[in-house]
Every structure is written in structure tokens, then in C-alpha cells.
Image 1 (spheres, rainbow, N blue to C red):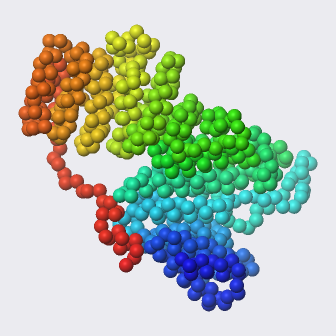
Image 2 (image 1 turned 90 degrees about the vertical axis):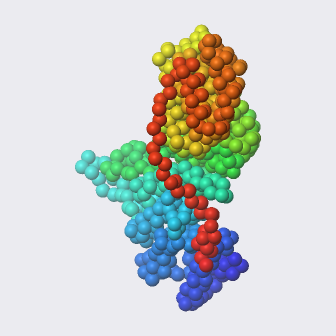
Image 3 (image 1 turned 120 degrees about the vertical axis):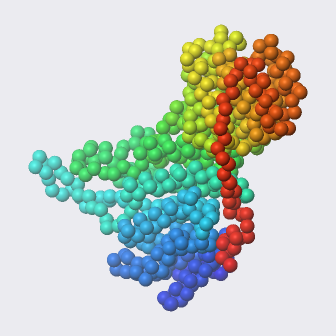
Length: 609
């Protein structure tokens, strides 16, 4: 690490070195980039960044030598793609990002090669040898952003004055494109989509949520890439104002509009940044701002603050409902204090539930909020649950049926977006359980003696939510081995028993869990069902009430599954529910999910011994 720092200082001082010595020192830097310790890699990359800019000059045409291109860019790309040692892919991914512009973009083919290999390395299915590597993905994201900011988009720059006239006497402005390669609108979209995909990286290993490293790098990268790409959409006069920090008007004039006003030039310019891209980016930041990790919320909030509060940047004015977001998220009563401690759950979540009022970001907020409400961290669960309940109770008090119905639709849609993914489904079910227990969705469920007078919706709409929810929960339970998920589904079914029209479906789900193959699940289901019946005697007919209680009390539910199911069937016939026979498929040996830290082989691959 100290040697790399020395080489960095030599390059900063630009001490004269013969070419042979430059190559030897470059080899030394490459050896340090391979090192297993991250601080050594980072210092080696810092040395490489300065070294490649201080030495190895370009030729008269501004191009690097073919030997240098092969020695550096081609070598680094090949190692990222083929190396089976994690320290190599981590280090050389970062190394690609620190290279100067003339080495990366001297040809369109070379630029595409570097971009494609980095995009490939950011994917969750990228393997180093046979194992995934979170650090490689994170470093590839960082490098991809650095490459884009170093090269930049292809910008048409005006040179010269007005020359020539058309037939009607209209003057034409000459536009010259300098002979350089940059990112096209198509490649910019590829980089944008790659970063958006990285914000959905929720990979886990024994260290915890290692995917959060990629999500943080991608969020910060999206800001830089969009700001750089937006320069290509600006008129040169606006571009100059942004560089000088001159405040711009809220109504942004695009390059196409400027051309139409000035000369109606016939060339159609590519659009790099669209409103749809900005909306998706801000929605992603807001979703991460609602999630359970304090560090992720802090970084997402910092990015969002810079985007919303930068009045000199025209990109900020493209954000949908920007003024409303600023009013909700920041302390406007003190102009000198616009910051918020986004890592503090008690300060963040009360603001985030208010953003659910904005239609553009409602879905993103809900999809992030459920992960906090149904999470494990006590402080986060307490703050997020309290904020959500206060907001929904206010809506119910205001009789805002439309907003609550939209919330229920979004919650149900998440079952379809993430089928079988317990990372999302379990917190989602816990959130729905919380809202049902607090009678938030009573008006959406089937009519009962308690809610028949208060509901204002038709019975068709009422039945849709409860039936759809129970069917989706039942589908999620098929072959599920997650005990917490099974318990949560039981709580949902027991809560819905009080609605007359939902009783058959709810009873069927409860009885299925009474006959579950896990003794623990059968015993817990019987205890909870007994407690529910003891509290509310109206859930079953008075004629069979004592019989059902006796069966629940006297049966040893965690004993033999066959006898337990026979008693379960007795309860089913007493309450008038017909159990459907489920034919089990032959069991297959299930391969254990492989954790990259399970064996010493991971350490061997990482260090390279």
C-alpha cells in the first residue's frame, strides 16, 4: 500500500522516467491491484489513475499505441471475464474505471467493449469461477459510472458563424461534430437500465445484505450518469450557464426547441434523458428511502436532497411533482436548514407516508415501506408501522375510499410481482395483517354485521379484496417451509373470519394449517384458533361451538399427523367446510442453496493461493 502511494506521488510530480521504467512500474501497480486486501487495491487503483495520465503520451492523432491498448484495456477486460479468483475481478473492475478517456474511447468498438464487460459484471448471475461475488458487482458499478462520466455523451458542439442561405433567404448555422467518440443515446439507456437493475440487488450471504453495496453504488451512480447525459440534451448556452452555476428557469428549453426557434434546423437530435427515466430514478430513490437499512436510507436521502434542491441544474426541474416533494421532505420553515437525518427511522418514515399522496411515487413508496413494516429491526418496525397506521387511519376517518382502495390494490399486486420470494412476500403479509387487525380494510372486505352500515362500496367490490387476498395467500403457502410465513397466513385467515362472506375461504385456510405436515404448525394453529373462538363465540354456530372447542383442546396436535388430520376433518364437517384433497407429488432431493462462504474454497479463490 505504501509503495503504491509512492508511485502515485511520483506520477503526480511527473518525474521523468524512461519508457522501460514506466512499464516496470505499471507491472508493479498491476500486481498490487490483484491483492486480496481491499485497502491495497484502492491505493493501487489511485496510483494507476494518476500514472496513466502522467505517462504514456498519445500520438499526433490523439490515439494510444496499440501495444498499450493491448497491455492495459484488453488485459483488464479479459481478466474480468475469465478470472476465477475474486481479488482479480474486484481489482481490475475498479482499474477499468480509472483509465483516461483516450484509452477507453479512441474507437467506438473499444468503448462498447469496456461498457459491455462492466455491464455484464454488475449482474447478479455473474460468477467468479463458480461463485457470485458481491464486491465485484459493486466495483463494476462504480467503474461503469466512472467510465461514463470520463467519456461523457456525444455532444454536438457549434463552431464557426452563420454561413450560406437557403432558397427562402433563411440563414443556416454550421454545426461541426468533433472527431471523438462518446456514449450514444442507446448506450446511455443501456447504462441507465444496468444501474436500475443493480438497485434491485438483494443478494444475501453470511455477512448479511451484501446486495446493499450494489444498491448504494447504483443510486449514487444514477445521479452522476443522468447529470452527465443531460448535458447532451441542453442547448450550448444552457450548458454554459450550468457550468457557471447560473440559476435557470423552471421551464427547461430543450435543444430541439432552441433549434426550432433559432433556425429550424433539419437534423433531429437524439434524446438522452427522458421524463420517464427521471421518474423511475426518483421513484427508486424513494423506495430505498423507505427500506430497513439505515445506511441505505442515508445514502438515498443524500442523493435525493442534491437532486431536489439544486436550482442551478435543469435536470432537477424535470422531476415530476418536484415542489410537492420538497415541501413534504424538507424543513421549509428555515432556509438554512434543509437537511434531514435519513438514517433516523423516527424522522424518515413520517415524511415518507406523506409522499404516498403523490400518484407518481405511490407504488414505489408502498413496495419499500412493507419491507420496513414487516422487518426485524425493532426501531424500524415500530416507526414505520406507527407512521403507516396514522396515515391510513386519517384516510379512513376522512372516508377517503379511493386512496385506501389504491393502497390495497398495490399490496395485492406485489403478490404477482414477487411470487414465491419470501424476502418480499413475508413482510407484505405482515403489513396486510397489521392493517386488517386495525380494521383499515374492513370496508373492502365482505359485509358483516359490524361493518354493513359503515361501508359505502358495492358488495362486488367488497368481495373482491378479501377473496383475492385469501387466494393469493393460499397460493403462497403451497409447499412453503417458512414457519413464520405459515404463522402469518394463519393470522390473516383468523382476522378475516369475522366477515360472513369470507368464512368458507378463511376456514378452509385455517383447517389446512391444522393438518399441516409440521407438528409445530399444527399445534400453533390449534392454539390460535381456540383463542379466537374463545374471544368471539359468533364465528361458528352455537350448536357446534362446544364440540369444536373440545376437539381443539383434547387433540394432541403435535403427535401423529394422520390422527391430527382426522380430528381436523371432524371440525371441518362441524363448521360445514369441505376440505379439498391435495395429491402430493413425489418428493425430490432438494439441493441446499450454496453460500459462497461455506467452505475454505471461497478463501482460496479470493486470495488466489
